[in-house]
Amino acid sequence: MQRQRVLLAFGIAWLSATLLSWSLYRRSTAPQSRDVVHVVAAAQDLPIGKRIQPADLKVVSIDRKDLPKGVFLKTSDVVDHAVIVPVAASELVLSSKLAAKGTGEGLTALIEPGRRAISVQVNEISGVSGFIQPGTRVDVLFTRVFSNGDAATATILQNAKVIAYGRQLDPNAKVDPRDTSRPTVATLLVTQEEAQKLVLAEQRGRIQLVLRNSTDDEVAEWSDPVHAADLGIEEPRKPTPSPPVIRMPDPVQTAISTKAKAAAGGHVVWIYRGDKLTQETIQ
Image (cartoon, rainbow, N blue to C red; front, side, top):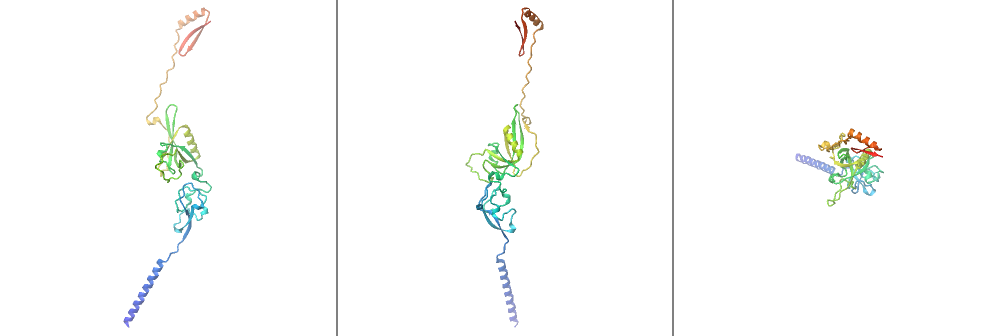
């Protein structure tokens, strides 16, 4: 009798453990309900300046807890916007990567409200050997040579953003190493006043672009122009010529000569030719 009770208790315990284990297993393997949101993503790579069309977009699902700021829930909210930051295929389209609707496409989409885009001529030297690319920031130096041979250089622009180099808008675009041609134009994003300074500087002298660190946005206080004398190389000054010396004739001989010529019936005239004084008689 005692043995039957022990076996019964053991069987009940084993059955309870089996049922509990099965319940836990089913609960852990059952699909969990997800709180997902359908958002807009790029169906293909979208380069800078491209105006988005419906074929460029797709809808993907993402957990609500992973939802980034600035996503779009409908493709109609994205169509006709221009891209200002490259968007890779399957990447979520965010508002921070798009220009305002109606701003056009290409370069015009990169011009911020209240700003202007102006292109300046560059070469191998003024373009920092081609290291200037879209997205980099530069200072602009202006050098003028004066009529006396002296020269001066001043900084007329600081921390200006390069939005295009040649026709290239994408800072991440791959450059063909076999292409030896260099762009001759850099397009800067400036204010109206800064644009006027640049145009005048190109007319009156020579400009040079100076590349800045991308994390350095400090604008220094304006300083006086640097002259040749500040480099210890001053233009030698030419000696001032002495004024011409006019030699006056001897007064006694002049009086005698004048009386003699007057007695001969003529008029005596004194004539200055440079630093020489001559006397002529007019009949």
